[in-house]
Amino acid sequence: MNSEAKAEYASLYLHFPFCESKCHYCDFYSIGREKTAASDASTFEKALIKEIELRGKSGVFATTLETIFLGGGTPSMTPPDSMARIFAELFKYTALKPDDGTEWTMEANPSSIELDQFKQYRALGINRVSMGVQSLKNDHLSILGRVHDESHALRALDTVFNAGFTNVSTDLLCGVPGQSLDDLRSHMEKLTSFPITHLSIYLLTLPPHHKMYKDLPNDEEQLKHLLLIDEFMREKGFRHYEISNFARNNLRARHNLVYWQGGSYLAFGPSAHSYSSSERKRFKNYSSLHKYARTLSEESKLPIEWEESLTTDQLELEKWMLAIRLDEGFPKHWLATDAQKKKAEMLIKEGLLTQAALNDHSINTASERIRATPKGFALSDAIIKTLA
Image 1 (cartoon, rainbow, N blue to C red):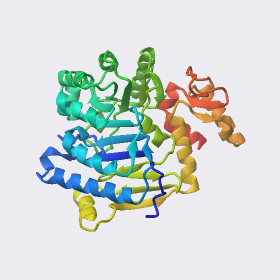
Image 2 (cartoon, one colour):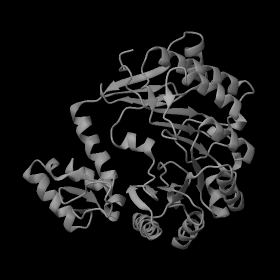
Image 3 (cartoon, rainbow, N blue to C red):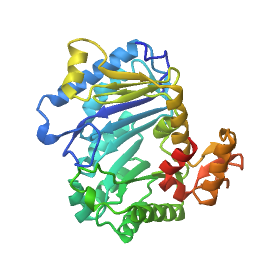
C-alpha cells in the first residue's frame, strides 16, 4: 500500500491487548480478563500472524531487525508456544542480528511472571524485560487498581534476573495522590538495589473528568517529585537521557529512541500506530480486536483505520518536541531567527535550558548544542511553546 516503503522497517512494535485487569488511568487499548472470551487469544494469534504475513510478502522488512518491542496490555500473559508461532511467521521475512544485536523487549507485570515461562521467552530470543511496578507502596497500588503488591513485585523482579535476563527496566509512577517524596525515594532505593539497567518514571496524568483528578498534587509538588527523581537517579549512576527515562551503562531503550529520533517503525495488533519517515506518514490499526481480526481473516486486508501525511508545520513542531525531550538537545543553528535566539537566552537565564556539555564522551554535546536542564525536562511543554 502507499504507506509502505520497501525494506524500510528495522523496528517493530507488536501490541498484545490482553491484561489481567484494565487500569483506570491507562489510555492504551487493552482488554481485561473479565471481558475476554475464551476464543479471543486464538483469534488474536491467528490475526497477528496474518498481518505479519501480509506485511512480510510486501517486502517492507529490513534484512535484519534493530529492535522489537512487545507492548500491551500485558504481553507476558501470552504463552511462550503462542509467541513462538507468531515469531516463526515473522522470521520467514526478516531475521535477528547475531549475538543479541537486536534489542527485543517484552513488557511484563509482576503478577504474570513465572520462572519457567521467562526462561522460555529468553530462549525465543527476547533479551530485555520492561516490568510495570508503578509503586512499591500497597496503598498506592490499591488506588491505582494494580493486582500486585510490593512483595510480589520484588519477587517477580528477582525471578526475571534468575531467568537469565540482564537488561531489565522497571516503571514507576510519580505524582500519585498521597505520594510523598520519601515514598518515591524508598521506591527508587529498592529498585536500584537490583542490577536494573533502566528506570522509567512517569508523571500520573488524568483527564479532568476522572474521579481522582481533584486529588492529584499541584504543579509545585509535581515539580518537586520530578527534581527529586533526577537528583536521586543521577547519584545512583543513571543517565537522565529522556524526560521520563534513566539508563545505566548507556543501556538506553533503543526501540523508544527510534520514536524520539523520528525513525520509521512498523506496528502490529489492534490500535497499533506506525510511522514511515521516508513518506512522512502515520497509520493506525483498528482499536477493536474483533474488527482488526475480521478485516484480516475475512477480507485478507490490512486493518488500517486511518493514515495521515504530516504537513511541514507538523514536522517542524515534532522536530522541537522530540529534541527537547532528549538530553542531547538541539544544535544552536536551529535558532534561525533573532526572536528564537532571544527566547533561548531567556530560557537559559531561567534555568530551563543550558549550553553545558553532557558528561558523556559517547556523544558530541559541546557548546554547539543546547539542551534541557532537569527543570527544563519537567517544564518541556513551556520550552516547546516558546521556541517552536
